[in-house]
Length: 141
Image (cartoon, rainbow, N blue to C red; front, side, top):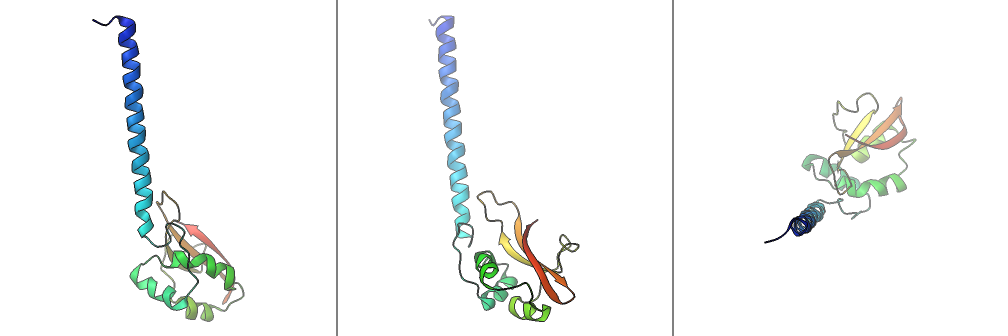
């Protein structure tokens, strides 16, 4: 028969073992969850050059190809100073978004947020002065 001290020691060792098992299971879950999102384009950093045709095509499919192109678009295509008509020809029609209506003139859905714990979507917000783009930013909903 175990005395009180041995029972306490056994209980602490058992509890520590149980905590370790739970921690390993949780870590495995987080790893597999984050890797399962890699089949979504852009989720794991696989960027591609901006392609206006692919950008416009991906709008109707709700395909997150845009999230893969946004960094290249912002770095290499001068949006500021472009005319609204030119932007619409290049990017296609904007999304209808009540969320960003007050802060953006043109809004484009990019795809799921680029993070391991993606809960939101990312959006390209273009601001206009009259018909000229004056700025742009990426927003999350």
